[in-house]
Image (cartoon, rainbow, N blue to C red; front, side, top):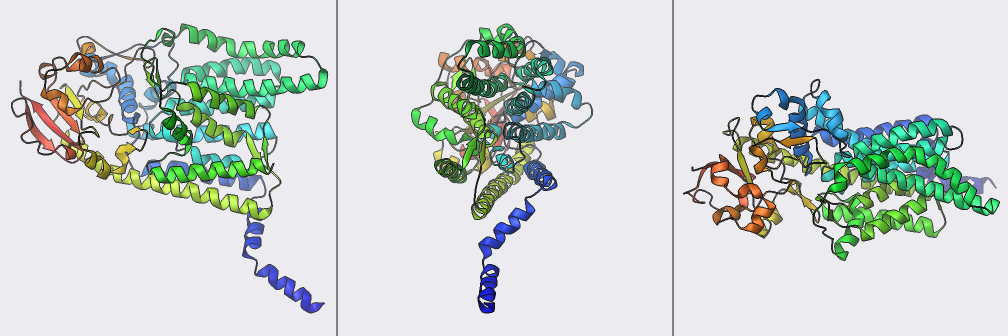
Length: 548
């Protein structure tokens, strides 16, 4: 008997998997441990923000320039002649409300980091809060939502949208927690919070409607099974929902977006299927693809083995998000990436509305190791790309150094079709594979650091509280992308003017031309010498003075 006991003891000591599982169980027990891991996750999420001054996020430099003008433009002798403010019922104001006052206390680039941190941390906080309210227990599973904090839309710089997603999840958590206990307070605070989400970003309001709608629909089905009646419960539910969502509904009808018009563009079915992995996208397409597929495979196995529990109504919310994504266009009402927002909302909902249960200790340990490794690989890879982006920032600042205050700079670009080989070998941070470029709004530094006008600042009516004053209003870039630099070599066509109307008299309306991705354009010393004089050049950009 003694030998047998010794053998069993030795076997337990030599079982590394069991020992690891026991260690993880001890480490992940208790409230203090949860908050410690949550704090560590927050620190890990914001760490990349400190390796670069301006991260390569597509729209982010443009947002910085707009906040700079909103904060200081009215008292600047140059900017006050170019830009005016036009506030109204605009469902896209999250950072426009917060940043201008903040800039009188904090430097611009530091304030921008704070807004990026908010866009990263608020959705994760919302996931944790909703999961806690829905399952009435604290779990480590929602902390894994840090895996989708750096998603495709964050890399595009959609800060208002992501802040509103976090606000929607927090609002839904309060709804679930207070629905039965504090209905009056819920109606009052819910109305205020839904209006706040509306002004942050209208898609956040839609997300809130879908989460609460799914919860209430599931509740009505349960009551129908229990009581055998539906109409009285529907009327009571409507009486609770109406005061919460009627005010933002009225605001939506009054907002200028209700009158917006524009072309409608749809993504091809293959792209639509691929971009279901939007929450996991990173600068390295293979890394994002592998992480996304592994996570979905893990979730599929948990559901298949009935080891994954759904929060009440979460399944309905996810189904609606998928259905809307299947039919939603890519561009509508002069706004792009419309449909791409739904996979990101779905990604956060997968962590907020699900909970693995009854897992063996070894399985829990394996999941923890897998998700931690995926998060580390994604974060370290992103930090490396951002660190490398510092070289592009240095080159751009060196190139635009001669641009004087009060000048007007036309920005053009080398397109992928102009030199495909160059685009395959350029720095990773200039491109989100399969999604979009990240460099097209970096010329915002012309405005921020040189007070030079460039025509692509976000000033769309109904979307931003900033307008162009005459005579600069005829040089509005309509929030487009820089045209191909070859467009300057021939008379401007009507089609080109419809996209970039400021090109009509570019030789007289502008003082300088800035070419992006100039390293792939070949010999620029002899490029249009009768119209352009090369001043500075680097791989990232080249600056020409226009010969008047």
